[in-house]
Length: 157
Image (cartoon, rainbow, N blue to C red):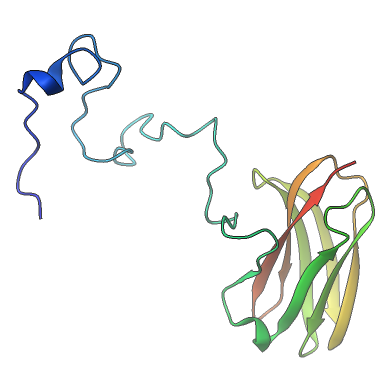
């Protein structure tokens, strides 16, 4: 546990480029890369990065994310072909009949398509994704009453 702040009186730390008067660093009252949420402009990554772990999986392309185990309701969520140059199919299997909503968002989290699939029977499902999508990375989300799962796909025309 830190009991106090750092002391930057050493000339090696306060000279040009290290928090001193001619520095490229900015002296702040908090520790870390980002200030408290109440600090205006504290997230220096905003506006030039796409970092949003709530909607983007940074582990592996095509990785399915779920708030329940995949084998409970939706299985085998995938987009083919991936990457696609136009028409693509979202494929998955429902273990039980359920109402499903399919949403497509871009890499910035903006909704680009909403497919109200309605009540689907148990078994294999194939849903056509919009062929009009522009080049980019997209996230297809399948939501049922039990789970929400996503998979990424790329459009390269």
